Amino acid sequence: MSDVLQAEGDTAAPSPNLVDDNADVRNYLHRLLGERWHVETAAEATAAFDLIARLRPDVVLADVMMPGMDGFELLQRCAPTRH
Image (cartoon, rainbow, N blue to C red; front, top):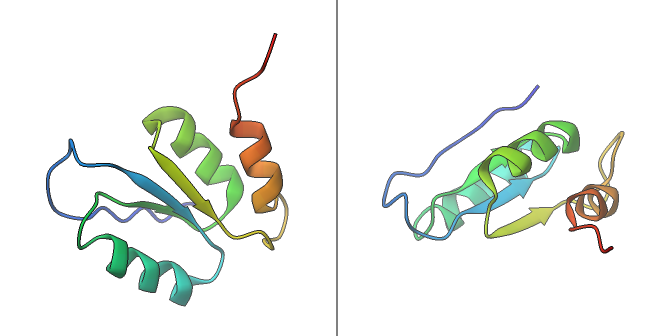
């Protein structure tokens, strides 16, 4: 399950995606980053992967120690495939 928070502001602004299973950390970073940018958050990597595929954020900040898929695996799955 994903809980998505959106900062008010210009939709053309850079859009970071924040992934952390700790709600306090997620909300704190959202509050800090949301002052300048449109921020999307997810509580777990699977939901974040779907958001990233759909929204194509400018940057992804991911917790490296999450249950299930960790931040490293999430970022590897998001990286473009080289042919």
